Every structure is written in C-alpha cells, then in structure tokens.
Image 1 (cartoon, rainbow, N blue to C red):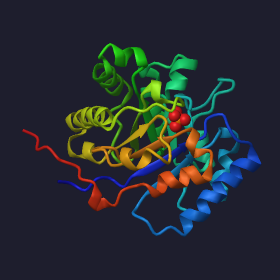
Image 2: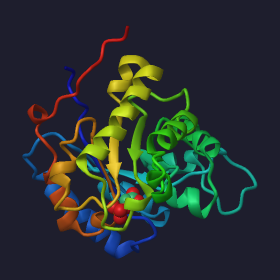
Image 3: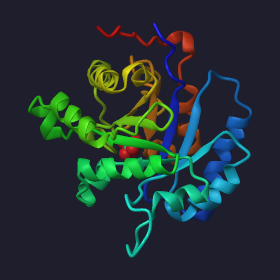
Image 4: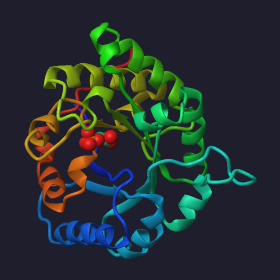
Amino acid sequence: MANAPIPLIAGNWKMNTFHNDGHQLANDVAERMMNRMGPPVDVAVCPPITIAGSLCAFLAPTPIKVGAQDCSQLANGAHTGDVSAEQIANLGCACVIVGHSERRRDHHETNELVRAKAEAVHRTRMTAIICIGETQEERDAGKTIEVVTKQLEESVPESCHSGNTVIAYEPVWAIGTGRTPTSAEIAEVHQQIRDLLFERFDYDGFAIRILYGGSVNEKNAHDILRVPHVNGALVGGASLKSDTFWSIIEAVPKPSEVSAPVRVKA
Ligand code: PGA
C-alpha cells in the first residue's frame, strides 16, 4: 500500500460571477479554510479569467489556489481574444483546467489540442487539470473504458508528472445534470486511469491525482471521495455557494480511511 495523494477539491465557476460576488464567495471559503482543523486537503477555485488576477492577489495569504478554466496552446502573438498560459501564470494562477467537455463541445477541441494546451501549462510550471469523460451515447454503447483510454493516451503529454498534472474524470452526462455514476462505475474508470498512468509514468503515476467531476454535491461527496483512486473532486454548480462547497471540502476522508493499492511492475 502507498499513501494516497492529498485530496484536491477544485471549484470550476465556469462563466459565472462578477467581481463582487466572486470575491465574496472566495472570502467565505478562505475564512473557513484558515480556521479548518480537518484532514489534509488542497483547495483551488477556477473563476472566470476576468477576476482571476484580483482573486490571486486576494487569496495569496490563504492556502487556496487560483486556476484558470482554459488557455491557448500558443505563447503569444496575433491571436485575438486568446489568453496564453504565460499570461495566466503571470496573474499568479497555480493551475489551468484544459480539455473540459464544454470546451471540447463548444470549441471543437480535440485530444491533440488539449495535449498542446497541457504542454503550454507545463511550460509555465503551473498544474494542468486535464479533463476526460464519455458521453451518454458512449456509455450506453459500452464504450466508456475505450473512450476514456483514448482520451487519456492522446490528451496527456509526456511532460506530465505528479507535481504538474491532475486528471479529472468527468462523464459528460453527469455534468450539471444531478445524475452521477455509481461508486462501482466510478471505481472502474478510476482504476483504468490509474493503470494507464502507471504504465506510462511508472510509480509516479500513483501520485498523479485523479479527480471525479460531474454533479458532485454535499450529499454524494462523502461516498464519492472514498472510492478507490478518487483523489478529490472537480465541482461545478456546487462550488458557487460557499456552504455547499465547504461541505464537500469537509467530506474529504482522513488518510487512514483511504488506501491506494499499488501493483508491482513485472
Ligand atoms: P457540475 O460541473 O458539478 O456542475 O456537474 C462539473 C464540471 O463541469 O466541472
């Protein structure tokens, strides 16, 4: 048995919040975080880029990290409207979500592009939170493992290691729907992701955090966070209210409650 990585609870605010309510939300979570006594947990919020810079400054004295929701794969130049990983790092952000299914859907992002974005994040020494997950049709067709395997193989660059990469398994059909897979279904996919990371990155693959995302809330977080190889959660809707986000943070297991079964490489 190896020690499981410290859980990460990351809030994805999507295209929500303005300056004032965003700062209020961050303040409410930060205050509780500063006085928290529970088991170890890392917390990040990923606000819209419009307030990421001011939140970086605001949250700098707290343990809460700030992330962006996307970045360009390019470093600079004539790309109107795009924001580079370098510019995001310069704001003080610690991480960037790449390959979220809403970007894959709305902006036709491919695995290849997602990999290039993750490489851009690594170039700036931030952490890439790389999202993968199957659609309802793919699950119904029994293709979940196949789809997730391909996405992981193609979206995860060689520059990954446990210090700069988090994988988020987010079934597309569970995002914002209130529907979640069973614990057994989550366990099956997370085990597959762990095996693939082990094959590619050897023992460091055990230290790469694998988050579950998709309709995580204060009611289901306790069970989801105890599924083997679930090392935290990427939370959308429930991260927009400090009470529910806080309940999810409080649901992280003690290190003694989780085990990370390690296979020995042949
Ligand atoms: P949700 O979103 O928690 O609202 O389902 C999760 C996500 O898209 O990251």
